[in-house]
Amino acid sequence: MAQIENHDLECIVEDYYDMTDFDDDAFEATESLRDGVDEYSDSDFEDDFELTKPKMDTSALEARNGKDIQGIPWERLNFTRDKYRETRLKQYKNYENLSCPREELGKKCKEVEKGHNFYDFQFNTRLVKLTIVHFQLRNLLWATSKHDVYLMQNHSVMHWSSVLRRSTEVLNVSKLIVPTLNYPGSLAQTLSRVQISTMAVKDNLLVAGGFHGELICKYLNQSGVAFSTKIATDENAITNAVDIFHSSNGSTWVMTANNDAQVRVFDAGNFTCFGRFSFPWSVNNTSVSPDGKLLAVLGDSSECLIADAQSGKVLGNLKGHLDYSFASAWHPDGRILATGNQDTTCRLWDIRNLSESVSVLKGNMGAIRAIKFTSDGRFMAMAEPADFIHIFDTQSDYAKSQEIDLFGEIAGISFSPDTEALFVGVSDRTYGSLLEFNRRYYNHYLDSIL
Image 1 (cartoon, helix red, strand yellow):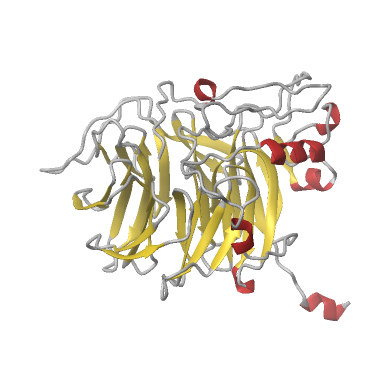
Image 2: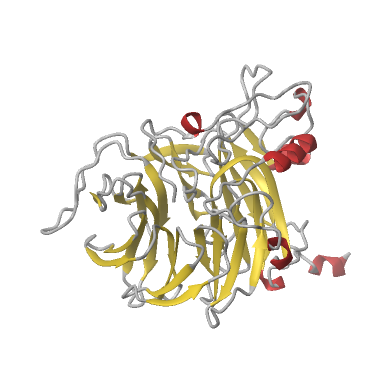
């Protein structure tokens, strides 16, 4: 993945991207590209009006009554939402590492029936604004229940309660981080001023990866940080992804994927590193199959790998993508693996036959940087870098979808474990927020009563 320094722990936009204003005479997009890097957050909307006391939340009732779900006052701007969407689709430039002809890509993509509504908008709050440290890494939002969400904001991991509708700081990484568990022979180290590039939350454990190869592990029901260390010392050693999973013997393990082409496995009991696997390219993402036996490895290659989760031995190659991959997820039944790529597609692979993907799902304008399945396997969501989240009905063989259309860089998506809620984090200087969608149920039996 691209190595971009970010010394002030703020969004990387201002150092690497030019921003242009709206032209009142000729409608222009608000971002431009420099040095081939894709568009990034900071506000897409220059405030040509003054908000004295902005209302920070949008409810489902307000949205039904016509309010924009992000609170964008289109009626006070010099252009409509539809016009801005049209222009943004035309002018957005997707970031690419490999320049490949994409003329034939559309022909290979699955015909999908859009317009379905699986999750309804419920609530949007701008009281929390997610922060992205590296533009290619977007796993910065995790829901542990339909009421509890963890997200990255500036120097802190925050907990958002959708019941109390307030946030609480869980971890501040700008301060000195001193691990409380330091067993003999442990790799534990004191850290300071960590820039969190990726995170995961599961089973009461918060794991965060750092921009300079750091790993931080914290139990949510305990004060302090249980374990912290710098697992890689290379100059280009970003921790690109972390994963918390149960091994085939039931133990809880933590896996890290780093830019130094290494995958490391830690025992979540004592945080000893007992596995290290090397690959021929920087590893951007890993995910372990539900049974804990197989490992998907994605990185700076158009190919993805399937490896043995215990030994790291490569068992198969997945060929079809045209660029580098940054996202993957397993269907709960363990048979389908989804991979997201900078070629703007998500490919679905049947683990029983890896010779070619069974389906190719395409985004609207950018790379697929996040993929999540519901715990019941009914839906799969994939997020582009900005503006679009696509939800697919797996029971229709991914032929039916819902498209969530918003504006801003997407820092993360997460279904609640009970499948009742979908959370979307938006990183934007003005309209950064956390959006909540609730699962829709159709009570067809009522039709027979009426």
